[in-house]
Length: 265
Image (spheres, one colour):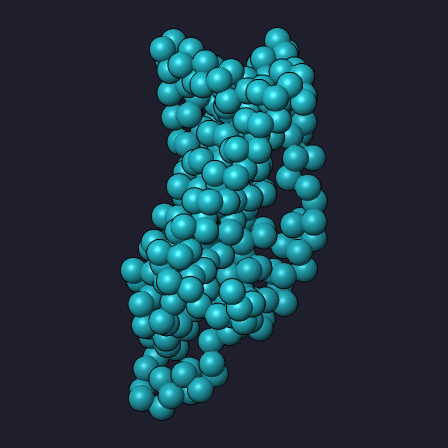
């Protein structure tokens, strides 16, 4: 078997087979370590213990309710943050005056850890849904807006000059040329920021929540229920994977002209 060359493409079937084998190896190693008695159940539960927690949570309704609450929160926080970050990043990337005015304060805030705001937001909003949305906004918006600004800056200046030559107004150039040319990069940015969103949400739910997957993990920790802890972690990973592949599917269907597929990314 020859050594793969740099950036050499592979077929979708090969990609899928490798991915399945890798996941099977991961779960196989987990089963071997736990069922083989190499680690204590308190350190790492067996797959059977996790399945038992899944059955218990499904039958008593807590699993569905917690998953629903977390998904609703993540979607609300992500949509609010992105709806504001896209236009702000678009204008910052297009106008140097706006970039000069907004980049320093946004850069300053984005280096402040979102989790450090949790005690303050608990004082302001208690354990309400608003508190979770504020944490998500702090964690997503300030990172996202600068990445979108960079996406906009990759638009070739020749396209803008050509649009002006054809008689398009400044607003038309911004909307039909700059925005549309930077849209593939923006979609990729949204996909990446969704991953950050899950981290911030779970931390917020661990500290100040009465429902959600993060809250359920924290409750399980109190009773040393490692099966429920691992179940919560795996569900978050599964949901993140679903959202990630949804963005990849959207990218592949929307930007076929780029000659890239979701699997190749």
